[in-house]
Amino acid sequence: MLGIWGTDKITVRVDASGIRAYNLADGKEAWTIPVPSGAKELCAASYSTNSKNIGAVAFNTGDSDCSTLGAVDLTTGKLTWSAKVTNDRLSNPTLSVTDKVVAIGGRLVGAVSIDNGSGVWQWKPRDSSCSVSGRAAGAQIVVSDRCYESSPKSQLYVVDSDTGTQKSTPIALTGSIEQVDKVVSDQPLVVLVTNGPNGDYVLPFDKSNKPGKPMSVKEPGSDSLRLSGQGDAISANVVSGNILYAQASGTKSAINAYDLTTGKRIWSATNGQSNEDIRLVSGTDKDGKVRAILPQGYKKPARLVTLSPTDGSMTDLGTMAMPDGLDIGAALNEYLMPADGSTVYSFSRFDSDSPLTKWAKK
Image 1: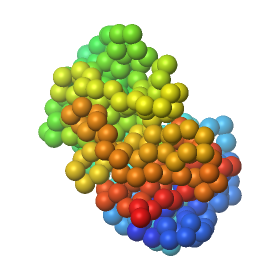
Image 2: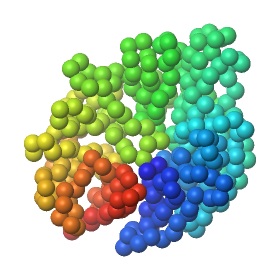
Image 3: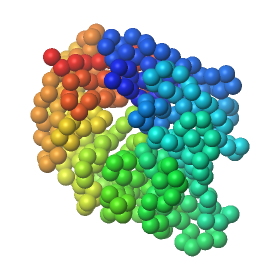
Image 4: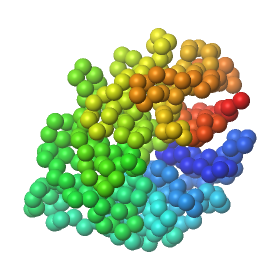
């Protein structure tokens, strides 16, 4: 699965094999966009759509070349245009959309018109020796470079998606191959940087794009956090206010909460049932609290709870059972829940399984 989009009437699943919309009322397929002629598969999707319900995708035309992009209109269920945006091969791009552009992050950093795919701007490196890496998210692209004819050798920038102008003072990177890896959150901006002087770390920014205190993804005695970015359809973390909530692996599944102002863990929540998962739900409720699903064992309904930002204590919202009575399989799905808590949607990681399941509050 590459992406999940939606409107007030449909939800849309983007896979390598195509784009499928389902009616929220009954789960029936509303429309399908197959892989177009000349493309092998889809290889990327924007994290969300813009205010006009337009999303963006990238097509692999062979040899992992994803330099052909397209725009999808969720209202009509049509691919409105497709265009090759560079003559160079572009692998694994990240995409985001505004009302004006499709922003591109990868070895190419730039933007094309949301209306027709024509070029709007392209990032210009500091000198000809520079290599560039970018990650698009929301109305910005986070860019890192490595240059051998400029000083400092590596810098990190926050760039406006619409115009390509810098939204922050460049930040010097001192690791040997330090670079931006993922945008964990775009509002507030939180970035995962790899290969820093002391390993991988999380870098939060304030509203003026001033960087805060770096936070290592590795705690002593624990496995490193495996954070998701906004280019990933399956989320492993949520940022709300100044707290990062993250799925933690190890001997037992957990959700950890970290204070981004200090870089310290606040608490860790686990499932009280032995050997059962705890699964973070994407997004927050209207009060900014995160939700979690706690399977209770074979043929038993799972608990749906909110987690207190202060101490991780749980407040029950209800239970969730599969129609066939089997285990909910929380680890294999992406869960979305609107802020009002009225429904929960589950998207299977694999397109061969049931693509969409809905639970409604009674």
